Length: 226
Image (cartoon, rainbow, N blue to C red; front, side, top):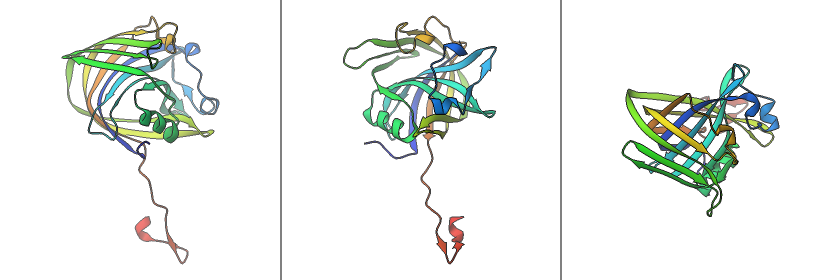
């Protein structure tokens, strides 16, 4: 069983941005590909790959590896998650059913030792490697900054648009990514990120709060429901 939306989450994220030839991107589901297009920079798309450690204090705590492409929908920026693994059944089922996020299960490790982070993911039960990274946190940037973006996924034959809002600290980061060249993240193999950042001690709200239906009395809306 998984929590209803919105999910309130907190933790650490280690993010790298790659510029990947658009022709090398994994295809989007048909209904989504008809609505959005990758944002192209000289024939290259911005792809974000991240390790996330969701910590106690949120509705769920688990580890995650994801890859997402920056797209636009009639000029509005969106994020579309193409590959994602978690080590929580509740997260997998909730992500798929609430928002159309194609989560799979994996054995994940995100170990920290001071400013050094050693992360890896593999198919459950001692299966093939998906990828690993060695990350080193650097300079801390001042203050805590807001986070805000919209995730666009395919769900039930339609495009599901999900807001994400939060706040976090930021640190610069050096990242060595080692995706399996024969695995699902092969399109990142041998590439260096153009930018890497640690999004530290974040809290975020993923999804929308449930809204009550408006009640009418004698053909008039209840003013309290406006």
